Image 1 (tube, rainbow, N blue to C red):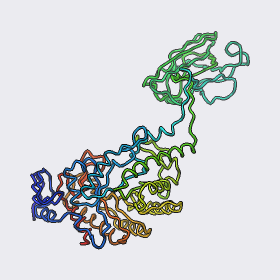
Image 2 (image 1 turned 90 degrees about the vertical axis):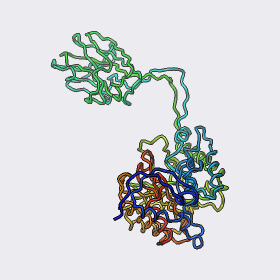
Image 3 (image 1 turned 120 degrees about the vertical axis):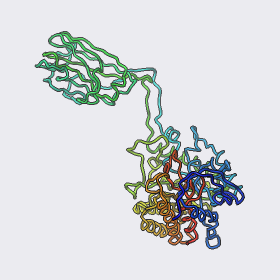
Image 4 (image 1 turned 180 degrees about the vertical axis):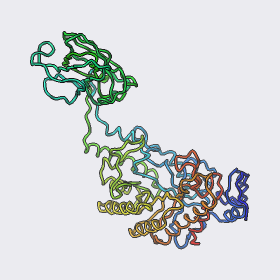
Length: 558
């Protein structure tokens, strides 16, 4: 048995078929978990694009995903892509969040630099992506639909809640361990109205065993200022404390609005506080009345919050106003990007990842979710026709023969989602827009269900649309590179081969746009994408893996 190498060594690739010309030499320290003979066989393969059937299928494109900086720096990745692929798709740099500035203007210098570099090398550029919910300049988009603020005249104390006890409405207060009633009319503070009467008949060991709660919403936050005022008296001299509760009986801090004193005569109590971290998120003041057996009388309780901006007015935009503003923002973005790149970029993912995972026949939504800083769901403001508008705009501003795709993930594992996407394409076209093709991302695993892969391709082929495998990469059941075995790599090789051969066999040639390998190299440990996983055709040190053979054999039909 041939001994497997698991040692670090210096690799001199004389032919450098991995990424460079036949005369370049690579000096890189890498690890190779394959035998010397097996590596020699892998290195004997030609560059990937030489295995394409140019005569039988001249329009087929073999693409690679990469970052803009890795390509335009004209280093190893630049040469790898030029030697092995026809097309490049950027992971981030052509998206809304990378291009749209804080004022809505577009910064396209880096994109134009990429196009010039790719054009010089004879590599086409695939546009990815025009309308998505992630990687958006959400701050700019949200600013367009934010409320209109009319400034006030100065700082104010705004009422949060109040209780004068003139009605039986007790929605903002609660009593525990006390008898509750109202005084007769005309016996409230200053001899007017009535007051709340709370009777404590027992002297408790703990004052909090008899409590009166004032409830309010929203809860307090650190740094906010509040003022509590009320009229109070008791049949005997008494003192009592206040506590901060999240809600009644959910204690958080021993002090909220200080220690209060009461006498048989009406007094007015006023206390201002600045919320500390210990009080944060509380929405109830507890008055602890268990230390004195007496009657307590409360009247005209008012809780106010300091408003530094004063009595400013917020005017919310209507749904129709928001729809118009977001439609205009989409128009500006697509017009700017497509117009600037149309001389060289002839194919686009116009809409990316529209379908919901849990409800695969419906669109994704951001409603009811806490969104990240770069998330913005266009469909939440434009409705189901958001994609119709996107395709119409891309067609209006681009070339008449541009190819426009809709793209989504998980279609091979969730066939209902695949069907949902196909139905959505039919809907888009029923509204007058044209969709040229469907992209299936295929971020999969080496042990993925092959029968579902084949069924997905059959469903997509039946649409008559161009079909593109748009972001193919492949993990090993979540294993990190250091954990992968030769058996894992062979399974990965076989599955890459299966996916490509199945695509070529089921998708008619006239519908084959091509296949893009999303991650040519294994993912680094510090990557945001499948961190540390051996998902590529090359190692991080640019050494070909068995997966390279799987792709090459898949393309040739071996």
